[in-house]
Amino acid sequence: MGVNVALKRRMIELGLTQEELARRMNDTLEEITGRPGNVSDRTVRNLLSGKTRRPIARTCVALERAFGCPAKDLGFSPPRTAAPPEDPVRRRTFITSATGTAAAALAVSPRRVGATDVRRLQGGLDQLTILDNQRGGHSALETAAVAGAHQALELQKCSVSERVRQGLFSIAADFTTKAAWSCIDDRRLDQAQQHLDRSLVLAGMAHDSAAQFSAWNQFAMLSRQRGRPHDAVAAAQAAQALPITRRDPLFASLAHARLAIGHSNRNDRRNALRSLGYAEEALAKAHPAPRPSWIDFYGPAELLAITAIVQQRLGLSATAEASSHRALAITPKRYRRNRALSTVRLALAQLHQGDLDLACTTATDVFDIMEGTEIPGRIRTELGAFHQAVLDQAPRSQRAATWAGQLRQNWG
Image (cartoon, rainbow, N blue to C red):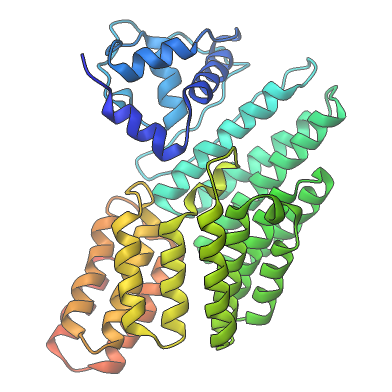
């Protein structure tokens, strides 16, 4: 018997305590069977300590739903009995096919809607976040997010308290922002704008400054992609003005980081570097706390990645290369899309320092990182920018020709 290292690592990565994991598992069991789950803190301790190496089928199902992966990846042997049948009225299914297609469904019952229903929807949103981190934005992810928002709003037709009503507005806003993000990452910018407009309305109706922050954060990214740096700065400042940034240094840090990118796009070196400094100071003050799952991506690794973007846009290629190396060294492997983006930006920093061979070698790592899934539009855009820079620097070189062949081979 020994500590289940795989389970412990995944809990740390997701920031889950034993109590939170037990609650998630019980919510899943209630969805499947229609009856409250009976997972206790002691159950989780036995799973962590290695005392339980072959959980019963229902526990395996709950674990797989909580972490979005097979039980064997969490260090467990498969159960000897079959999983309990799901009640078709109560089930929620998130299916990822071989091509990564996701779909979500939550049946609406005529009973009074409460906080448990909000948590169920939140669990669905968390699953979409896990899928996004692995594959990136795509149309099926957008469709699933829109469906989740629709279901949250449909539940308001049932008997709900004012607190639950606001919770449903919040989750609808978060689902809609997730749909917008999927479009941003897939470079479908007009559709992203429509989702964000809707999300800001829903977040306002919910009186949820965290949901409003999420929408303004995406608005800043969308404005940057559309070549509107002044709008990007204004969106980051709107996020800074929200109550959540005064309460939580992690949100404040992300707002400063997003503002730094906006300033760098306007070639405002002084304010860009100053905002990066503020972001670092705020992040140093942040401590673990219950937060929406969408912000799990942000931490020291993401701030380093953003720092590399700002430095590169200010013409500081050597420091940008160093920041990208540091970001890649600590970015968790589950954030495949983020790792791929940092890799192509590292390649661009190397290219701008004149090292064509090293830059092209680095860029090809992107294809290994994203192997098995279609490359999202945002990464394609970055690869396209790198390819153009290669052609500008050495249009007739053999290395450039080799790189072009690798790009064509892996583009699909």
